[in-house]
Length: 265
Image (cartoon, rainbow, N blue to C red; front, side, top):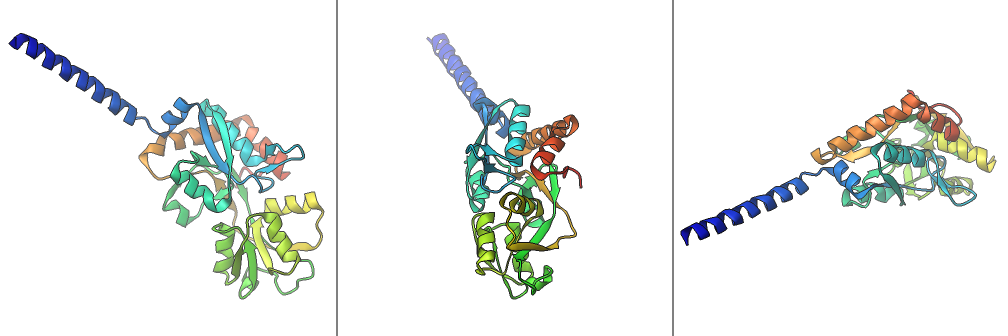
């Protein structure tokens, strides 16, 4: 009887250890492993910020960031599930798990680096000030002091406007900011030079003009929450971007959407 009880206890202990081992193994899967297991990477982006992400004449989602996201997914060996959302909800969505990563022309700032780790930059840009064509009172960033600007809520451009003393109105899209400037609802808007030039080229708009451009470049990269769970994913993203750079694909995408190679500082 003692031998039977001993055998039962031994078997129970063994099964418990196996269960613990399986649980530990499951829990030890990091973010990249879970993405590969699921077979897809969920990517958050705006979808209405041309040329980074936008819908073409066939209502297909295209753009620099769309192709970057698909390239990363291909390198990892999964599908890219692209989810569109407003700028001011992208980081919160990533924190909540709605998105695995955000690929949305995110520039690296000291404030963001406190919370997020960033991939190596995949493109470089400059920031510009846009005003109505007949506006002669604003010719520099410093002239924004006491003026009003229209920009996406929570964006770096909104922060820049405030840093120069402007009162900023939160607007969702670049087109809306331009309309506000044209209609006199805002004195200026601040945005990426690439987006502004693309807007002027595709719309033929002549009622606005660029009056100032930043001296410093803006590096675009992919943010991830600072945690050990993301270490291998960040490494895989960097490897994907480097592979795209070495193959010439990164430069090709930049020229396709920006009209020039902006992949180097």
